[in-house]
Amino acid sequence: MRRVFLAPIALLLAIPGIAQAQPRLPSATPADKATVSKPTRLSLTFSEPLVAPLTGIDLVMTAMPGMAGHEPMPITGFQTTVSDRSVLATLPRALPAGTYLLRWHAAGADRQRGEGSYSFVVR
Image (cartoon, rainbow, N blue to C red; front, side, top):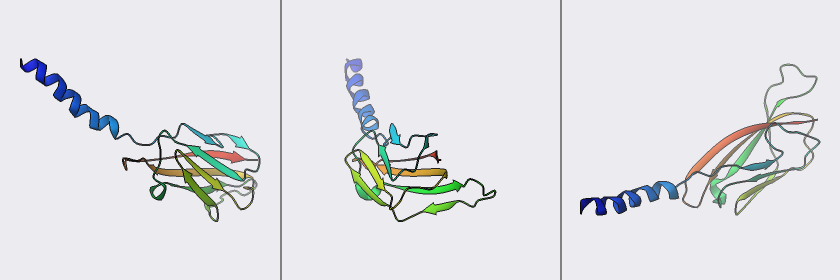
């Protein structure tokens, strides 16, 4: 009789771990390691609905053509909109040529947080 009761208890203990998954980033534009031409918008799509106040991005230019030893330069002044599973960053002007690092942080409806980063090149 004990075996019958252990299986449902084990299942109940496993469910909270499944329900509390961190948001993942299955797709983005520009994509990781992509080379693009003068983007004015950045779009990230996540694996689950997001909590807007706990979600955002940071963008840093890490290299500029023809400038050896270029210091990382944070890009500011863009508008970010969080809607359901997506984040859209609208830039005031096209990004100049260079290499960029995009860092993201996101929280799902269960408040589990995820974070990550990727890079892309603007030609």
